Length: 60
Image 1 (cartoon, rainbow, N blue to C red):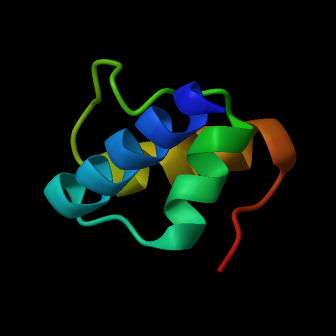
Image 2 (cartoon, rainbow, N blue to C red):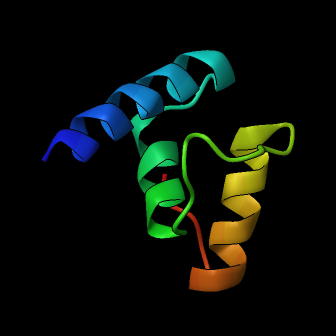
């Protein structure tokens, strides 16, 4: 349970730093990404591209 709280805080920080919205974060989580991993820029486009490759389309 404590790891989830730490991870939630890390996702909130990634959200602020990378200008992500909740859908972007949800897609990143479904892709198995971590908020502490090396991100490619621009993050939002990277997440959408990967999500589309794996699942066919990204969430809007």
